[in-house]
Length: 140
Image (cartoon, rainbow, N blue to C red; front, side):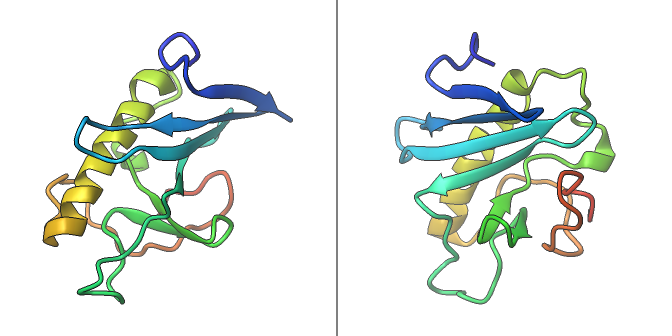
């Protein structure tokens, strides 16, 4: 992770990889403070720490597309891949899979926020509720 994303802070805390820092998906998007967590045999999780993800003012009760309602984070968190689709497996480096997918998701989020259209594709969610802790992202 540090070789590909040297500006991010990467550390292991009690067997949990925690990567935090500021990313800017493109020159025309705002910067975001993000966190990625991963525990061996689990699924990577990504969080947008700031600015906080918001729903469209025009549709305040409609959830943000392709997110999980994560009560531990106190807000929706991005769903950047389908865990049942084998898009990501533990042999794929997080730095060259999950992180670029997060940047792409952030661009899609900004377009959706401005237009109301989600252009990022993806699998429709039956629910935005996150089930159990580290093995979240399984409700697709």
